[in-house]
Image (cartoon, rainbow, N blue to C red; front, top):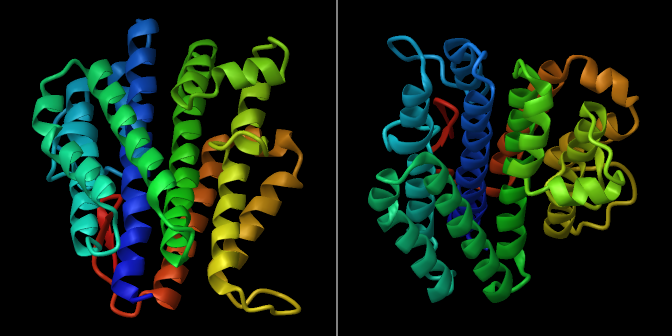
Length: 308
């Protein structure tokens, strides 16, 4: 597969997942601010902006600045609008390999951004989640399971790990965990699955364990890491008898095993630090994928900077 096409499919998966998960994170944050009137809004917004990689801004952070930088502003590289615009641009470069249905869905979503910005925040977040879910469903039903599919799934899985780690950091930093964890589970679409798995027990430790380590829930970090490893294994298919020649596969495999085989208490003791370490592993794996597969890499936005 041409490196240009492979890279575009990889980043389509990443950007769509980024838009979806940013909407989920903002939904959690806005609900926590509403449900916990004693929370310091400035501190909470500063923490979220830091978790999302936004360091340069002027004025005192509040929910409206947060919405502008992370949702509405297409000039902000970490915003939902920027992610959808970048997904559309990557789709345009890979137009000859995408089905008409996928292209139409992504292009329609991009064109609908101006209308979405005028919605109430909860309605906009729901719109973004519904649109990205629809695009994922179309991709699942129309893409051949060839290398293009594996690059798309690899990008989506790496981004899901990174963004779920950010969502967990946001929940851990919230001052009211009795509010943050149920809201976080709902943001991931995990609340009902969690209640069934733990037979109605709601506790912070169990919620963190479910979103970190559950192998059956597709949005958990361990499940997403395993999906990324499978995609890389299908792309490599080298039949190597020992070790891993693929640096990205080695990095992701090590991150998964460090989570699975460490005591949960060690991980949740300082969850934001652990999640930051996981984000660095995702960034390193993305660099390794680019170095191996994308000979003439494009420039892509990444948390306030660029990855080349």
